[in-house]
Figure 1 (spheres, rainbow, N blue to C red):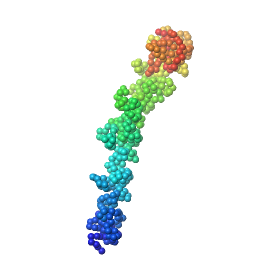
Figure 2: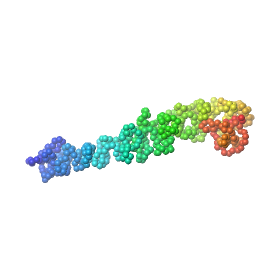
Figure 3: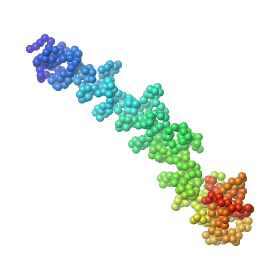
Figure 4: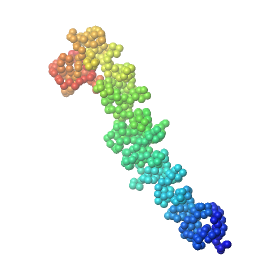
Length: 528
């Protein structure tokens, strides 16, 4: 039977996309009224503001007029398509239920309800939705995460404009950028790499990414160039290189921008340190995390401070530069010293015989070990020439011969050297003042002017200053004495290490018990 303006669905009828058919059935069910579908209850009344399934088992919504809703929000948290079917597991771009000026993206889950208030993983990607269900984009959650224009949470490296800082009414600070964009790195969780202590200036985080080390500030910006890692960049400690690290700038060839430099690199030091260096461009050697190798203060080096790189020994100074020239170096922590010479160009330890200009401009002959303890200044007799801490010991032309005592097995051995540094052996020689020195076949002094010399002239001694005179306090085997000598009788050997030259044991001698020990050689000549 047909009723005017109303057709009733059979139980087998389906509401399909684009085409719907209707056949008569009982009073309750779907019916078409004009161009609109309605649902009649058992009393022949339209159902309003409720959901009903069609024979296809899909949900449709009846609005306040009892008409099937199409292409709109339904029941506040749901959406129906152009065929009136409730959307599920699907993206929809439309205006918000609460209004708005433009279409935005929403996602309706398995139940058909719009996703709101939090994160949702969809097809393996993470999205964030606000309280209305609007898909979010850009920086979010205290600027710790970044969502692309497609709404998906980004991971890995991203080149982005920084988040807007409402407190500063400007973009957050960081390294200069020509295009206003910076590199950020986001963990697999989506959280950006940055310091965990807020956005205080001078705080940085160094992280290993794909085998390289990168530096990020409190806002997450990847850093390049020199970075001061120890708090306040204006602190006194920032005047030394040891608290700085270097991360590759774009102009560094064959290096990934932002990655810590490893190995040798020649570049300008941090701008703050430019006033403390001799040259604008210097050499540095960096650890894998960008930290430059540094060494002790000048004159405080030990062989323990040597750095072996590619089979060669280097010594770095406090500024992070490999040293060059002649240096006094302690042997381990023994309290004993020697000399090393570092090549002016390669900065590596040299071996063998060298003519070297000392700090006072004097050119002297040195010999550095070639075998064991390679590079160490040689002490002892080599090819009948006498060396101490590498330096050739020789008499001046005025005296012709000079006595030199070197430490040996807790005692001192005294040799007689001529003006070329050659030792005398198994003979008696006479200096210009007529003093006679007898030496045995090993070159060891045995007699002075016919008197036995003993087995060592000096046991210990120290230097004292009295106006223009320098007092060398020494101990002979026969007793403890000192004498005042002109400063001209002293000569510096290496970097302040004193080699004492005294012409005579003469004048008033008196006992001194304050000797502090002297490890250098003692040169003894004659009265002149």
